[in-house]
Length: 177
Image (cartoon, rainbow, N blue to C red; front, side, top):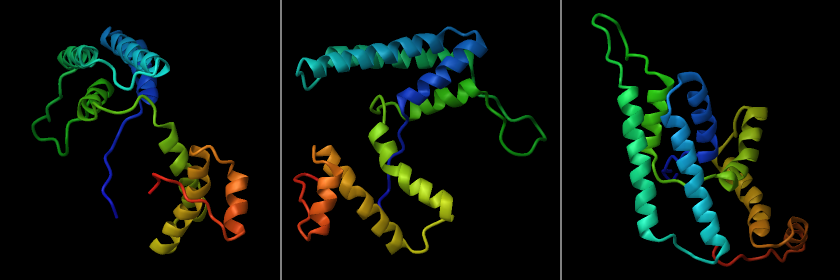
């Protein structure tokens, strides 16, 4: 099995930031949302203009603003220390926990919708039946599920791809692994 890198979806983070902005009365969550949305709009604008990379000056400004907002939030929400004589770790605030995740997982795409869609069916199957009986069964399930998803990503209709596969002429997708 491959190790995977954990990533946060900014669309989900926006919901958490909205909650913190409303519940804490602190200003940094709203400013973080504004900065994330501005960076997203800047990247989208570059894509629509056919620009493959946002100028590094702009990226550095976004990163600097992001880190400054993290520092601001951290100053307002410091880590709680464990009380003397109590077992376990000290319970941290929602704001502290979010700030930690934002700092630990700084660089991710704005949304991970494709990734979420790709794992949705295996998770549903796992919830319904409890688990896969064998690792080979899980691999087969993922292989079968990935074929129509890959076809869709390459602009081929899922039904056309499945017909080809059932007619012993499965499509090969260049660059898919």
